[in-house]
Image (tube, rainbow, N blue to C red; front, top):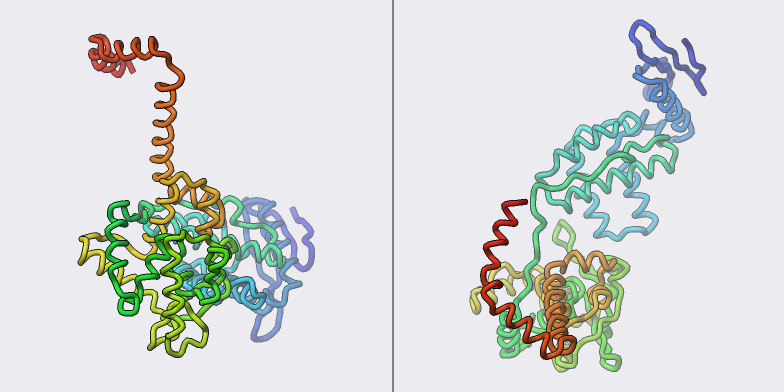
Amino acid sequence: MSIKGQGQGGIYYDKSRKLFIATYYERELKTGESKRKRKTFKTKEEAENFKKNLMYQQENPIFIENNGLPLGKLMEINLENKMKSNLISKSQYERVQATQRKISQTYLYNKKIDEIKSDEIQDYLNSLTNLSNSSIKKIKEQFTQSFKFAIDRGYISKNPMATVIIPRSDKLDKKVRSLTIEEEKNFVGWLLSQNPREFKFRNIYLIQMFCGLRISEVLALKRADINLREKKINVDKTLVTLPDKSVYLSNRPKTKAGIRKVPYPPTLEPFLIEQLEISKEAKNNNQNMLFKVDNSEFVNRAAVNDTLKRVLKNNFGITGISTHSLRHTYGTRCIEAGVQPNVVQKNMGHADIGVTLNVYADVFDEYKQKEQEKANKYYLTSVLDDDSKRLINNMISGEQYKRLESPSKDIEKEK
């Protein structure tokens, strides 16, 4: 049985092998000559999809030039396109390149995209469960974006990512610990005893704890970002550290939600004014940075983090805290104070409310319990009359209530 194909070659059924054969022509890069080739498929649909892909590819010079486009090349093209179109920042470009280097360790990286099957991608992702959920998600995203790009450009007609699911990591997601109220109280007291001209990171830590800014956002603040009239801090930049340790000031925050005006508490204002004065005295501060060290254009992020860890450990015996923990501490205090989740989300620059709810799930649960206790107290004081209260109290103090543990065990046995 022969099926007429579109373009050169065709499809026929081999009865003896019980397979569909697709014939096609492939151009040799060195000679420019076309050679007739064959490929076998279990079903007619697979053979027809293969022929459709060839038809698309005949119109794509990039595909023709590479004689079939390898996945790695596709990923590179997609990334370069985004960079040229100004859709990603330099730091994002570097992060994606790092992810692509991980993917390059699999054979799929050099395999032609029209030959890659869903099961192969799924097997590869399933082999990565020793990585964190975040790393697995980034790798899958590269496959998803690349094959969507291939579909949009007509390099392939069927997306192998359609049925691929993301596996769960064997590792538990790392939780960022916040300072307890007592720990924060002691730390703030210690900070206020320090001279900010000698301990240059003092006001950095205070801004993080009282406003919830990311450390990269605090270090990117300029003097003009402190709005004393509106009592707000303007956040629209971030300090980026590249893999080669070079640092630059980016006008593109981590997310669109990162652009925001964060209200600061009155207790922080004296220290902001103080820092404005200190920054005015800083040497070679051509960019008018709020935080500046004399021997460098920008404050070193790692130095701020290392200093925090050393201070907390040496003075209070506190470990497991980073500059990100100070931001997390702000979010925790807000929720404990009853601030609505959408307000916490906006102040912290989370992309959506789901991020806030997930990050602070444990804190929200504790807050809900405290709110329920308010409801319980309200019932006792406002809903129940004195006779009802006495009746309930008598039941609670009675022998029958004390023996409740016994029937409870019997019920568990019945289950």
